[in-house]
Image (cartoon, rainbow, N blue to C red):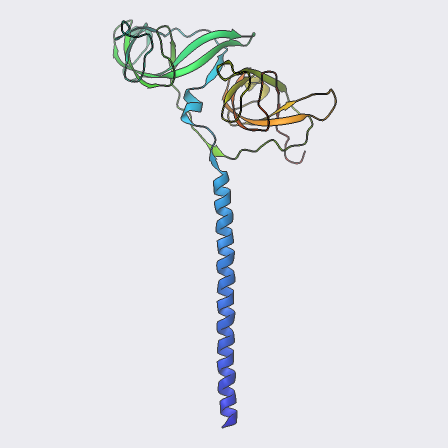
Length: 270
């Protein structure tokens, strides 16, 4: 009888032990999965849109080509105002004979002064769509204004650009010069003396130097010749021309100024 009881107790103890092991195993598995989800969440939080619609279509660039031929020569309400906005009707100096088509979408550009020998400073002011054509003229409606649109602004065919998400790679790099071309900041948003995170700037590096949209470049200063660099920021290329580019400041530990130096990020392993 005692033997039977002992065997029953042993069996119950074994079952209880297995139950405990399974419970503990499930708890450990659940905890591991939870930690994994937390890590995924952290990674996901680090990935965010690096550029906005405003960055793509309302920023500025250096125009390095010949001046466009198409421009705004009049407006439906030009006698009431000098600045035009969303849904306003404007008149263009070209039409069917010059190849314009109904529904065609154009980017509106305001040309300002020349920046050094690089070209004209150009602000993107919005978009306009052709709604009516004559042989040598057109009527267009402003669909999206992101600045002052006036008579004399130029238009070029609108090109859809894709935004992208990513991580700010930061500026925590060794304070030494990297390989590749070096440049500098040549213009700041609306002639500011200094800018910070989220602002735009122009640099004198472009496609011919290997720069492309989406690159993140390092901003630095060289206070003393041959001494370690003062690395101060990280910028994102949002528009690249042949010899110049528009950049957006992603992060910085000091305000950026005209003349601050630009270099490529160090390659992995360097």
